[in-house]
Image 1 (cartoon, rainbow, N blue to C red):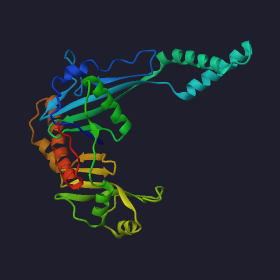
Image 2 (image 1 turned 180 degrees about the vertical axis):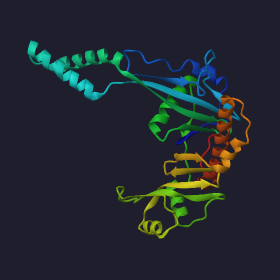
Image 3 (image 1 turned 90 degrees about the vertical axis):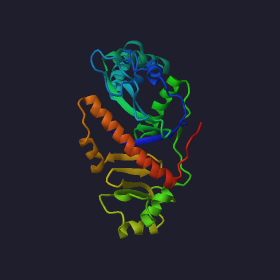
Image 4 (image 1 turned 60 degrees about the vertical axis):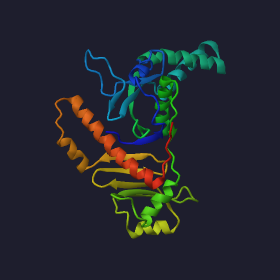
Length: 302
């Protein structure tokens, strides 16, 4: 299940056919011994022995892809210590070394250490919802999301996706909900928020595990503080923390949604993953419909 959703919009009619074949040329390759990192797409469902890995998995109009990276871990402290020792040895034999000589020694040292460095794998999942025209990247980091999007654009040749945008400022809507404005149907306040002074940006109040309709919250709002993050619940189906940056953090399915899995007959791990994926996409679509109405989220057509 995705936990943090950074969202992009793209035209619902954009051609995503044969996506597996188009991603294959950009599949993750093992990081070379002389390189710091490599990146590419990996099978979202994993790869069973003897099977051809599928880089795109589609259920109910939503395409699941996964982006992987392999990075060689070369701690700066290790490089600095070894470099200092080599520079000291060089000075004893040849005298002082200039900036160019120092750089050459460092480059030779890194090239020597890289093949022995540990490789750290990392994976970021994403969903291309062709029904909504929305891309969900499972990260709260815009930098990480952009890395996935950049490689997807390279694989497709072009991909006209833009960060999600709202016609109404999210902090204004969230602040209004905290102040007592009517919430959308089936939506309730959670137990977490982050308030910030719009003038003194360093003035921040973080509230967790406390009811958000108390006098303490109202006192903060009366001083002019605005909601930057706000926990919400869509009935007993899903909960999440909405940010002013329109990132959905701590996305979680609740009891009513999870009970649907218990009623699903899954005779294999692949079938269970399909059921979980379909459930998460369905619940996200419910959440997105609410946010689209409340914030007037812009769509892309074409």
